[in-house]
Each structure stands twice: as C-alpha cells, then as structure tokens.
Length: 303
Image (cartoon, rainbow, N blue to C red; front, side, top):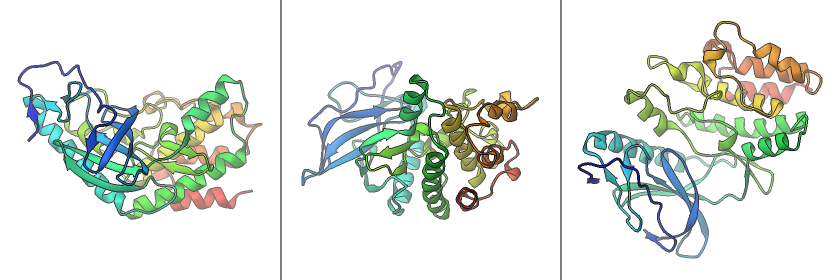
C-alpha cells in the first residue's frame, strides 16, 4: 500500500536523483516528465543504456527529494491504484509486442509502491520537434510529401500490430512519434492509463491533447476503438502538412472549416494526400478508415 498523506496539496513531486538504484537499474538523469510519469535515462547491470518510465501521476501523488516511495492523499488512493494497475497491464501488453515502429518494453516491475517500465533508449527527436523547428525557420512545406507518407506508413504498420494485440494507443500526436537518428519512426508513450483515469474522474477537462483527440474521446458514453487512433493519425498528417495542430472537434461541429483550411496547402501537396487527411479526420467514426492497414495501404497505393 502506498504511503498515504493525511493532508497536503501534493505540490512537491521530486524525480529520482542520479545514482539512485531501482531494482537492477541505476538512474543516470531525468529525460522528461508528463502528467502520469517521469522518464529517466538509466543503465542496467551490464552498463547498457535504457529508458525507464516511472508511474508518478502529478495530480494524485507527491514525493519529497531523496525519497523513493510516493505519498498519496487518502481520497486519491483508489484512483492511484487503478492507474497503477493499468500502467502495469500496459507494460505487460507492450512487452509482448515486437515491432521496430513500436517502443520496446524490455522489462516491467513493481517496486517502491509504484511501477517501472524499462524501454529501449532511443536517440533522436520527436516529430513535434521537427514541426516546431520547420515552422520557426519559415519552411513551407515543413515536410515533403514523400516524407509525410513514409513516416505515417511506418507508424501505421506498428499501429496495426498494436491493434492486433487488442490494444489502443489513445494518445497519438507528433510529440509521441519519435524519429530516431537512423530515420526510423517509433510510436512512444501510450495513453491507455491516462484515458482510464480521465473516464473515472469528474474532471471537466479531459486529459487529452486538443486537436489530436477524436470527438468520441470527449463523450463518456462513446465507444473507443481503432477508429479513434486513426483520427489521431489523420491529425498528425494534418500537422505535418500545415505545420500546426488541427482545430479541436468542438470547433468543427457547426461549420467544419477543415476543407477550407487544407486548401491553403493544395499547391504543396497532392489532392490525394489532402483527401487522406479529410478521410481520417471525419467527425463520424464510421466514416474513417476502419483499420490501420486500410489507411496504410491507401498511402502506399496512390502515386
């Protein structure tokens, strides 16, 4: 059972310090952090570099500097444990997937009353980094059509394997598509735990990235499926073409400006690619490609 904090605003959330030992791994430094965890560079007992993601939800737990075990408010404990269970199951599922376009989970374990996922350490930049850099340089387009197609074809092949494993990603966006130094595209940071906690809390602000979350993700009674991830892939296509995120669904309901906005790049990209974006980002889930394979094949087939 996690340490329960009787009264606290949970303001402090200290990451693990360098040289901290976690199981057979040694923390080197913090790489990044989000709402549900911290990612570290670490080494295993042979000295090989790995990335470790620690379950540490910022709105549910706190931890003082130098400590290993998080503290959780009593009224947040059931949510914390639900997220912990989902995070562990996510690790178990990802550990069974072996595909170059999906982040590799090498190990997963419970310790210090939380869960750690050990992943292969990727070197490179996210797709988001490239989009921002291109926009700042005034590049138009930021990516060639062949680059847009090749990145998404790779990602969709990995996503197809994920879906065949009865998993959904639920947080596909340029920041979660990693481009390695070898120019390979890799899906990272799955959002199933985030989605579970969002659904069981009464938060009016869903824990999603505006513009990339499909319309059905904002409705508690809606059915999520392969089509939900497909919408996000379409939104990534849009971002690569436009150099910015798409409008969130609430701004598309009455008079959808998507077609008009995409006309801005009609001279830079083929009509076929623009049709792919519109198709993938259809507001009605039934109107989208119904599998990653279908969209991937469509991207391969057109010339």
